[in-house]
Every structure is written in structure tokens, then in C-alpha cells.
Image (cartoon, rainbow, N blue to C red; front, side):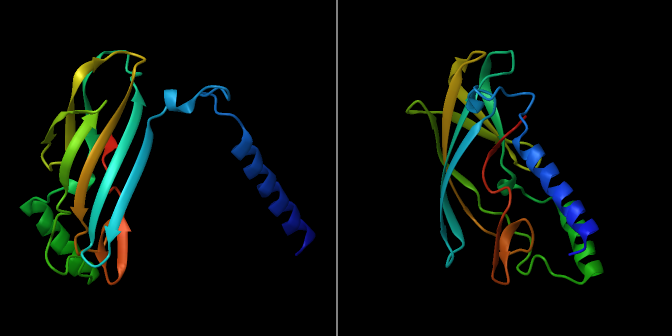
Amino acid sequence: MPVRLQKVFITILFSLLFCSFSESPQADSHQDLSAIYPRYFLRADFNSQTNCVLALEKVRLTNRTGNTLKEIHFNIYANKSYSPEEANVIGFYQNYFKVNIFPNGIQGADFNIEKISACGRDLGYEILGEYSTVLKIMLNEPLEQGENIEITIDFTFKLPNQYGLLGHYRGINSFAHWYPILSV
């Protein structure tokens, strides 16, 4: 390796190491990061024969909004439904790029919530939004500023037969955006 290239490589390496070990200005190294950021625990069992997923998600969060929360919202992108207009646009691009990303037609992920709970008690919920991608969870007790809660969501879904972020296609399983994600 030429000396000039070695110097560039070493400079890049030290730059990456410096960036990796420098402290974040938001977090003191002695501070518990779960007090700042939500913590996700996910367990999923995937059956590759049926393309079904049985999942359990636990989200621990601290109310840092400055307000008392009576509900918490999640995005559930795996539950997205397509409008007829979107289907037409997708069909246009499939033809344009000469790829069939929906070999069996546009399918959803067949996303089902089995149960939502916190502190051992069931929580009520609604699925909202134009595309059915907003999960509104009603808390049994208001969550005051600085208080913590751990929400457990049991859910199932089936990977649709499609190419893209969430689906199975030609032996490839893709799992992007498969679990409920806290809304900001």
C-alpha cells in the first residue's frame, strides 16, 4: 500500500475511533440512558413455512413531554392499507420498471394485536389514521412528567408475498418496520 494511501487510511481510522468514543452532549456518561430514550425489548418467532410471526414487544419509556399523558401513540407501519389511487401509482411504476413487486396483488401484512398491557393490567387501544397505521393506547392511570411505564404488546402478522421493506419474495424475507414504534 502506498505511503500516502496508508496515511489517509490511518487518518480515517482515527477519525472514526474519535467519533465513536466521544461523549454525546445530551447524555452524561453516568446517567441511565433509559431515562432519556425509550427501551425496546422484542421477541419474535418466525415460521418460514407459513410466513407468520408471533411477537411480543415491551417498551419502557419515561414521560419527558412536560405534560401528563393519558394516552401513548405508536406507528404500526406493518398494518398499512393501500388506497385504490396508491395501487394505480404502484402499478404504473411496476410496469415502468418491468418488475412485479406484488406477484399475488397488493396484500397487507395481516397485522393483529392480541393484547396490550402495562403493570399487569390490560390497556384499551384504537387503530386510527387514513392508512390504519396509528395505534392509540389509552393508559389506565395518567403518566406524570418523569414517571416510567412499561407497555407490553402481543401481536401477530403474516409477511405478505411482495418485494420491498416488509414481505417475502423469491426466497428473501424482509422485516423493515415490522413492530409498533413510538410516535414522536
